[in-house]
Image (cartoon, rainbow, N blue to C red; front, top):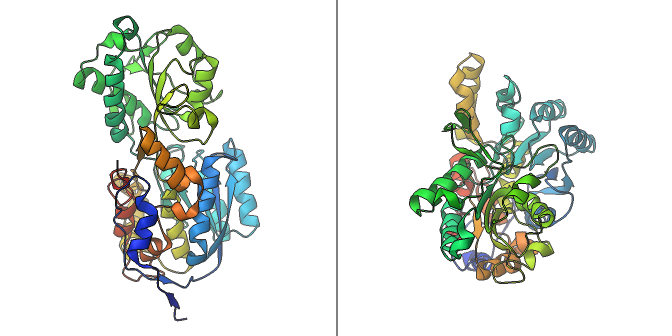
Length: 448
């Protein structure tokens, strides 16, 4: 059927919607692309990290702004707290007739999820996850990459958090130098998510420590290390080896889902905290230790809760000084591939290479599985907010902050231009270039 066309109102209007976020322009996938009539009518189910809150509202708003043009209906649901619940939820969605599943979490059982999907002809992809739990869950974990029903995933930022380390270190160093001499010893804390979830956080924590000590000349005595141990032997995370003798900074306990209270109780001079542990986990720790208003925190993740909204920057008790997030629109990376597949299309430049790597993998070429894993984007862009003006723009003018789909930084026109369904010249290379850390959605493009 010949697609009916409707002309969008030019690049200028689309630009006006997005420039206001941080005051800079965004390079579009195709500024002059015409929105075509949607092909197909498919059902997509997105499983989020939480049952309610900013993530759910923002994903819902973004999808609601593009779904009619891309030809799908959708539902946004909570993934659940454990692997068994996620599997049950996926099974239910498949039984309800959903054609595509997208998960914002990896609980180590994607092989089982894909088995269900393959049985029913349902496509599966991920967002904000490098799929490390599933890939490393067994010797056969990389087999999920061979499935024709798996479209891949996009990570949450960069494994090393290089941009965040650079930005936060500069601010923490300045804040440290502003402390009275009596306040400096043991004043800087670093926390992380569990290495089982995000092994890159161990690298980021070490990078933060080295950046502060080596680049800014902050003495080792400045760090809160009571209750901490050093590594007894070299440990490798995400391909990077951390040497024996380096600090093991406190991380969220997988069972209790909490940071160790002993760390905060034993480091009574904490003044400045860099938390790679998400705001969901650092906030309860701050409340338990009665540290609100007594420390300044640079963290990961965003929540539209009073503890952040009322106490960021120069407002309220000024506890929070920075946060970072990947764009909520990253969900579109697996989405457009799933919709292409459902419409009978795929990227020629991806399909040919994947096919060759699968054959090599089946022939016991050990390197093939690692090459296949590159067909998940390992690094997404990051939005880093560190001052009052940026925070105001984020919460007022960006979909993740205001849950208004028209404030999304990705449009239907951009997505159609990246899909083979609507653009026969679309390539996987273009898709990656758009979504990875150097693409149109980088923090720089948002005007930092």
